[in-house]
Length: 189
Picture 1: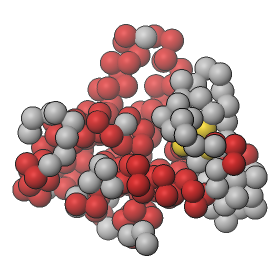
Picture 2 (picture 1 turned 90 degrees about the horizontal axis):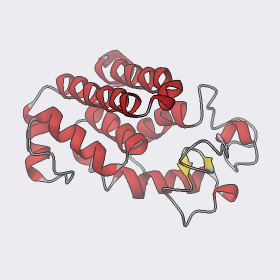
Picture 3 (picture 1 turned 135 degrees about the horizontal axis):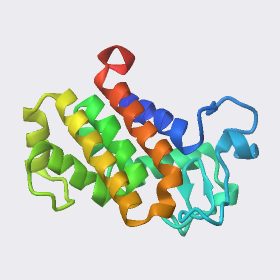
Picture 4 (picture 1 turned 135 degrees about the vertical axis):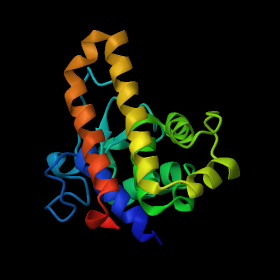
């Protein structure tokens, strides 16, 4: 059912959403009974609220996070992030990075990052104009420009709300690792 690009994108995103120890084949990872392997957290200081496999309760209020399985989480990622973000219509590396942006920042903000990266109006709605602009540009340049947008966004958060500085190093690490992952053709493409 899922494309190879989606499988790569969702598995790579889990390295950040769940953690560097992500392994879907670890005992309890698929059924969600292993809290560490499924990334289950319920940190009162996290604005996302209760989270498993990176699926946050605040962004997905109808989801029973405590009983979420990996198959259910993948379906949410595919139907609520991959397809609505039009990742399937983008160059592989751009689609993977755009998916990570949509998961991390929300679909609308990720669309604006992509649109700014390719020089079209940043209205948050990906249509023919945005997709054609992506197709006209070198994918690595688009990926670098998206990463630059994401880094600026996080730095702006910390400038406006210094209490968030404790997260900045991790946020920027994710972006720089995604930059390397999507711009180094030997890694995945």
